[in-house]
Amino acid sequence: MTALDQAPVNATLAAAMLRAADLVASPWKNGGGVTREIAAHPPGAALDAFAWRVSVADVAAAGPFSRFEGVDRTLVLLSGAGMTLAGDGGARHVLDAPLARADFAGETAIGATLHDGPTRDFNLMTRRATTRGSVAVWRAGTHRIARAGTVLLFCATGTVQVELEGTAYTLEELDTLRLDGLQRALDVAMSGDGALLAVSLDATDTN
Image 1 (cartoon, one colour):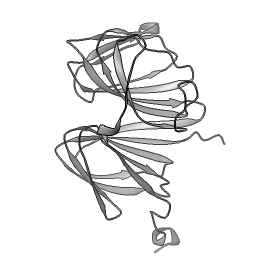
Image 2 (cartoon, helix red, strand yellow):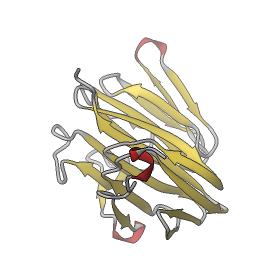
Image 3 (cartoon, rainbow, N blue to C red):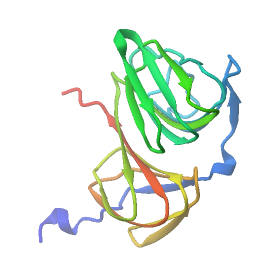
Image 4 (cartoon, helix red, strand yellow):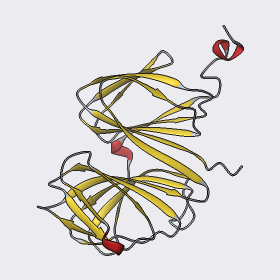
């Protein structure tokens, strides 16, 4: 057994549960929806100053998305009949089923058309110069988290249980388990009838 195998996975791991009931709703300036910020870095950063930001949005009406220069965006449909995103250069994304996703640059002019009424979606934004991020859909089973600065396990649907490092957590819909300080890869056992979005966030490699 190597020294790495013997080292504690969790020496600096910090876990925090972010409950859906604690998320604060903020109406959009154009009146077309409501956003609930789940987490951001730095905490409390303005929209022009975050390294990364994760949120849930309720979209009530068609309209343009705000532009974010130098930001990469991932949008995942959570509920509703869906939407079509259309923008510069013929860019087009059809989200017509739960967990369908769109990845696009924040500086792209994008407009949303709702298919049949309001939708709810999950949003990840990462500032390209400082942060890289990824989103994966998890269902029941064992999953591996790679070493990362921050990992967010967001319950997209249903109820799930996750176990890591001998501790069990139950997440209801829209709850998030935040993990900071992963020193090495970590296996997570997941059970339940729901789906998680596993978000991995780390500083951009500048070497």
